[in-house]
Amino acid sequence: MDPVTLATILIPVAVIILFILIRMFRVIPEYERGISFRFGHLRSELKPGLNVVFPLVDSLQRVDMRVITLTIPPQEVITKDNVPARVNAVVLFRVTNAKNAVLEVENYP
Image 1 (cartoon, rainbow, N blue to C red):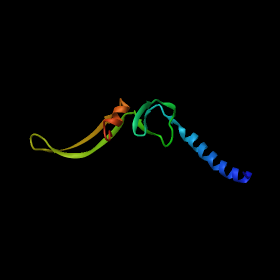
Image 2 (image 1 turned 90 degrees about the horizontal axis):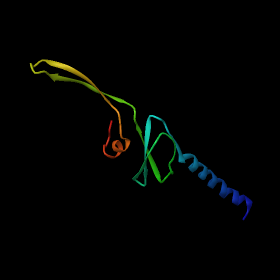
Image 3 (image 1 turned 135 degrees about the vertical axis):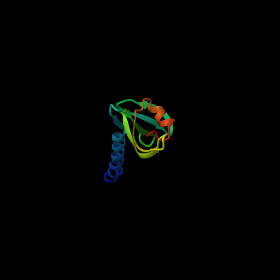
Image 4 (image 1 turned 180 degrees about the vertical axis):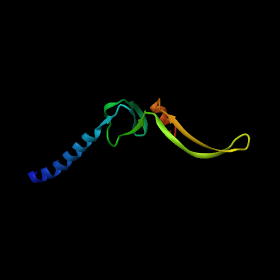
């Protein structure tokens, strides 16, 4: 085989392998958990730190474990004695189980 032809084959293959190796390692921060799926099936819950996720085989879904605030828009309500009142609300929640938040709730926020 000609050396030029061999180089034109090996260089793109090396670039693709390097890209896959770089994409394999994922860093999950301390305040997040990762849920790993392999071909759509639950594989494991990934803890914070450096984790290995195989591209094109595994998918990673990150779950924020911090306290999240949701502001509910102001609403008009009628009290028991027929007086209109305006109510403002804020909801605070925190995910305690990342697997259940992903698997059992459609859209937890």
